[in-house]
Image (cartoon, rainbow, N blue to C red; front, side):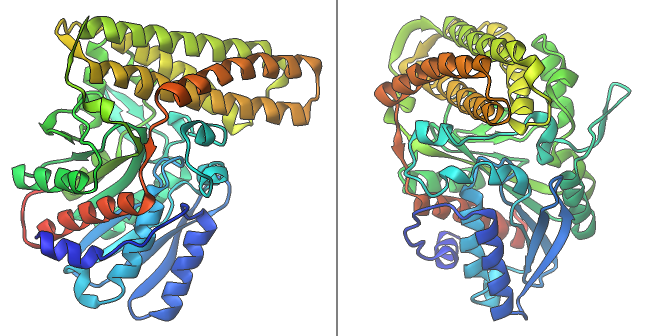
Length: 448
C-alpha cells in the first residue's frame, strides 16, 4: 500500500503560502478547462455572505469519497492539500482508485477570508494571532447538523451545513475526509473504525515527515483512543453524555450534531486529519514532573478563567458601542462561554498520577497559549473595528490597556514556545497520504 500511496502523492514541491479562497477556486476552474472530461466544478450552495460553495468532482468510480476543505476557517492546510491532490488525481484516470471524488474546496469562505491576512506571511504564532479569526460554535458548518437529544431538537443548519447535507444525501459517500489543523503540538487523527494496520499507517506518515505524534488526551469529549495519535470520532450522544458527566450542560456547549451523525444513515466512514503548524520536541517529554495531573489541569482552568474575565470585561464595558453584527464580537462571546465550560471540565479531572513535563508544556503553551493568542488577536481586531466606527477616547483607552496585556502574552510565547514552523509541503504530503491510505483501504474493502 505504501508504494501506491507514494506514487499517487508524488513529490510535493515547496509551498510558500496557503491558497486563498479565490486562488483555489481559480485553480479548479483552470483544471476543469484543461481536462473537462475528468473534472467538473459545481456550486452546491452559498455561504451566509453570499460566496459560492464549490465542489470539484473527479473520477467516475462507484464508491463516493467526499473531502472537505477548511471546516474551520483558520485551518488552511486542507486547501493546499486539495489543490495538490486535484492536480495528481486528474493526471491519470487510474489514480482515482475506483472512486468518484467530491472535493469541497472551502466550506466556510466567509470566515476564511477573515484569516487570509496571514496566509502568505512568515508563520509565527503571534503573527498569525494578529490576523486570526475563528467563528463561534453556532457558526461552524461541521457542527450544526440537526439531531435530537433527550427529547429536544438540536441544531439549526447553517446555509453552509445545508450545502454539505445536500452533497451527502446526493452522493451517499462511503468515506468523508475532513481536513483540519491545529496551531501547535503533535499530529493526530480521528476515525470511525479501522484496525491496527490502518491506524499505524496514518501515524507512520507523521513520523516520516518528522512531525511528532500527539499522545495526550483527545480534544473532543467522549473520544476513545484507538492507538497512539488515533482517536475514535464520537457521536453527538457520546459527547453530550460525557459533558453531562463532567457537570457541563451539553446544549450550552454544542449547537448541533457533527457530520458523523448526519452521515450515519449511509454507513459513512469518517477520517479527520489534525496537523500542527508548529512543533516543539518538548511536547513528547515523558520525564515525571513531580506534580499531579489534576493540579496541572486545575492551573489550566484558572488560566482559562482569567482569559475569559479579561475578554468579558472589555466586551461588557463597550456593550453600548457593540451591535452584535461583528463576527469578532460573536466569536469572542462564544470564546468566553467555551473557556468557562472548558475550565469546569478541567477542574473535574481527578487523575492523581504524576504529570509529565510534556503534559505541563502542552497545558501551558498549547492549550493556554493558544487560548490567549486566539482570544487576544480577535479582541484587538474587534477594538480596531470599533475604533474605525466610533473613534472615542473610551475605545482608544480599552485598546491601549488590552494591547499591553496581549503583548505580554505574545512575549511569553515568543520567548518560551515559539515553535518550529513545519514546511507546508510536508503538511500537504501527510494529509494527501492519509486520504489515499483511507481510499485504498476502501477500494480493497478493508475496515475504516
